[in-house]
Length: 214
Image (cartoon, rainbow, N blue to C red; front, side, top):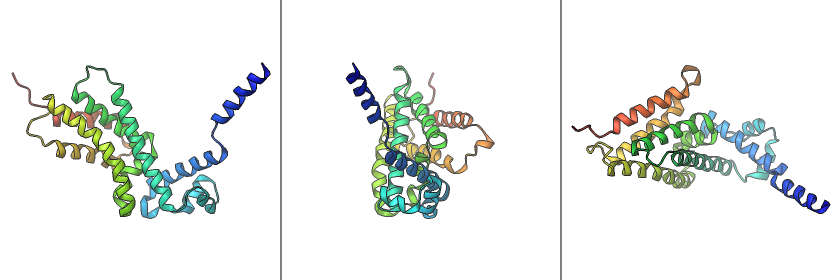
């Protein structure tokens, strides 16, 4: 019996993140906040170190360069956006309409970039500012996320729920572009996130919907 308790204790200990892992996560969290606030060009390692409460040289123990640190933030950001939208879609009832699914994705996207994740917001806001090689790698993750939206639009069109005169690609890009721009103008002191989501969903639904026929 004592031996069994010891094994369980060891398992709990192994499950806890190490001090090094916690420090690395703290650095990434700080980098996401600084990148969000200052943009790619204005993100300095000294600011990240100060926010993470580590000495600036210590950053090089975890990341070989400023670019590597920023790339990980951006990659994690796209992954978190994808995960949140995918989970929102999976939670819908089986009989949800295709437009319901698109609107759920609209709400989930705004939630993750405006409230839930500095990483997702930093990835969305800074993608075009990244150096070409880093941008190319980021676009791989972005295209994976875009594929989710492409399927949503294509399925709604095939089901006859989208206006036949709409170009699917243009519709998709306009929706995502409008949602991403919210990271630049939304101020929580000037309106609730729920109001923004409801407005975006209403605009999306009415803008995409096929005409009602008698």
